[in-house]
Length: 505
Ligand SMILES: Cc1cc2nc3c(=O)[nH]c(=O)nc-3n(C[C@H](O)[C@H](O)[C@H](O)COP(=O)(O)OP(=O)(O)OC[C@H]3O[C@@H](n4cnc5c(N)ncnc54)[C@H](O)[C@@H]3O)c2cc1C
Image 1 (cartoon, rainbow, N blue to C red):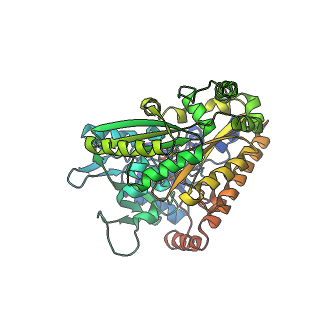
Image 2 (image 1 turned 90 degrees about the horizontal axis):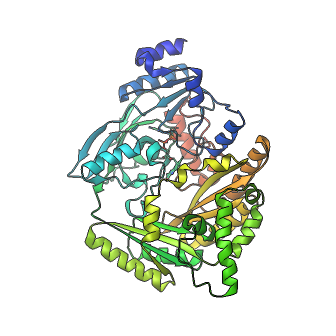
Image 3 (image 1 turned 60 degrees about the vertical axis):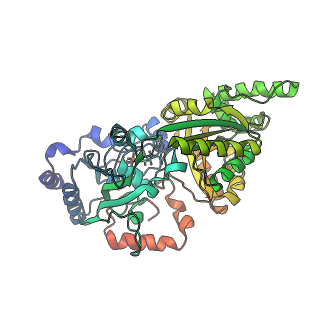
């Protein structure tokens, strides 16, 4: 009650919430393990309060109070995180940033936008589009995630090959530290003045402070957008084409290579497959429509016996779909597409025309929002996104797929590619009876996958972040560098009020 009274002196009481309904609403993010828990009536972590500051000074006042009273503070953007990053593990205060949603300045000379951190991604992009610009950042959660959340988790958008990840876009930040001090980095294209403090707060997932404002790069809205689709005989062949395209200096906007099973599910038999005149190919053709149908309907048998699907997948016609998109100035996209198409053909890709890419473009936000049918079937689904350099990528893919497929149905695509390497996005779905068995299986899959990933020297997260889910692998991920992170945390936040229990701290 005393805390409530003190908070109500900083913000009007209507912006300090503590009803049971509000506390339940903020007890989870979109971590699938939380969804499993909720299905079985389990909601273990409730915040004590939810506060809605509307400017930096209010955030500063709240953090000063939190430090004085030693109350845990959990920054909250859209709550679209999938790793339990906003779970109030020790109760305390959720600071919902969404009332801080103003666009402060569009700098049309330097091509940057400054905005408050609680702005929803789609609102920011729409306003930029109205003025003839784009931020070029399109996570699938565009409609339900915020600028602050993107920065705090090192998010990646669907056009990352051209525009980069959010850490490549950030120009400056305003951050409120746990004691209430307000820190602002300089807006400058580059500098040579010691550590880059933007990059200390980017990816810190609320453990070091609250990002209240940011300036990020923007681009002229593309005048031209082009699509190309190719079928490759297998994953290694498709990856070789992508590597050569990127290393030639071409920057497609989208690069998405689907493995065999993902190709069938995504393409739904609409992709032209190789001529199926041979009887064997006919049989494989039947499988091509049978497996995705089975998986699409999330039939319990398919999910309960993943190894069967995995074996059947091995019999599928060899075909992996690659989608490329190009955008920007007409004369540049024309050349980029021509060069990329030439490389794909030289690597044995069968041209599919623009249709697969155009279809993906139209439906690009649809897939992610329609997962719930699987949960309704005593099953669960989740994704694992890892990354490594080109020299280790293929091995990582096969090793992780093999490990995960022992326990669940698994497919993958490669959707964020760089000159030096690429990420892999595994989707797995599995089934078990009852809460405990489901949780046990879920944990087993993650343990197995992460162990292989660490052993292969890859990073355990390319863009979803760490949160609570992957906290126990942080030491293995960073080794000695974890000491530095702990030392920074201890210096800024000795009372450990900022998002406690996360990031392996
Ligand atoms: C359907 C769906 C699709 C997705 N697709 C993508 C994708 O394509 N690419 C991608 O990268 N991710 C994706 N995600 C994951 C998620 O959307 C991202 O991690 C996103 O960046 C989280 O933003 P948010 O505003 O929802 O943050 P939240 O979930 O609210 O918070 C995430 C973490 O950031 C911290 N945080 C939030 N705001 C601040 C702030 N202002 N200051 C300091 N810390 C803060 C929180 O404490 C928490 O630790 C997807 C999720 C879903 C559900």
